[in-house]
Length: 436
Ligand code: HSE
Image 1 (tube, rainbow, N blue to C red):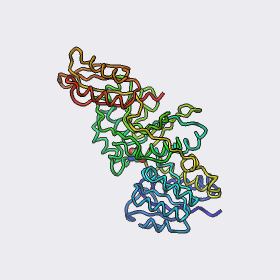
Image 2: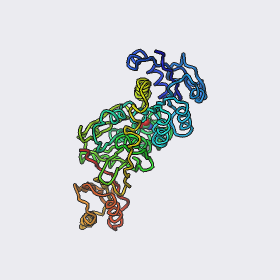
Image 3: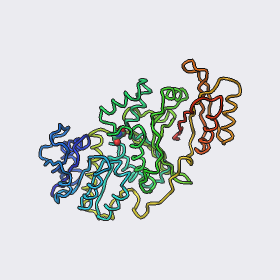
Image 4: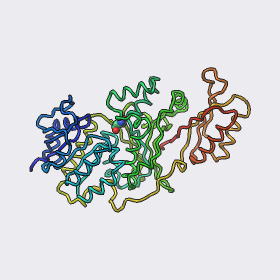
């Protein structure tokens, strides 16, 4: 059989890694795919730049559309990233009848509904395993491996940069900015690192996971995101004393009222495996009604881990080349006409437990006032402790763990407690999930 010709857009970290893996493992890949797969063309902004891959035998261009419009190319690998002009490239490739493999989470999270509709119309595949959690085959696991289940919830450490920062703060007492600079130097952080630390990148990935888990449209605009910039060493230490770790989690949960889509720092019991996922590693915990809890762990970024997912998608596309489009695995796991408009809940409707840290005067009756307000909002206390004053302050830190409550009630209670004359400053609130 004729080899399948592939064109690569972007020869940076992921593009370079993909070229290396496809070349190095060519024989093994051909045995799996049933055909030889060769990269004949690639595009890069600067053709003279030093690269991590050998481009011998690959015709290079600075214009991606040279490749997108080449009738010989059957599969386009979009490894440029970002959602600007890249969207036009992907839509044009689909228009030209080419299959697309992408590692681009923002593209899929923001424009996936349009892209998949166009791909279905043209009978081509758009594969995106590398868009979520790098080398972990989490899309395939949920879309295919768990397709007999009703997915109840999933929770993931899906941004390596954020996890690296929290891990270094906890283990080495390092500064936030210092660790972020290292993550950037290692090539893990996004071009705009606020995407990592403010939860935007994790929000893109959660959007994709929730869509394939619950059969809902991609709707990034409905994801609640809270970053890790407010997490202090003190919170990390107090959490630890109580038997918890703080992780930046993406959580999607199906409830009777609708779906919770949220990214925020979260206290989780240290005995959970996912609490021990450190550094730049990613992990996703998925709870299905039949299988129970399952955990997927691995490298969430980096040249070859991401290439591992890109190449697996290429092999899947090659295997499916001869199948009728309607007999292929649906892009978003559910048949396109079965995607349901289940409401996505606002943050006020979230139900979760909380860690609260407040500074209060150390005198009789203060805690009674605080607990009276919590009780008035139907918030049950799980644990409460008073810490030694910090830096010779007259007030003392009070740590409260609550049971599960409605976020709306918690917002109201926090506003009332902050208004007490005996409480100073803002309350630091971190959501808490037992993930049981
Ligand atoms: N900036 C991302 C991260 C890269 O740190 O996880 C992989 O998507």
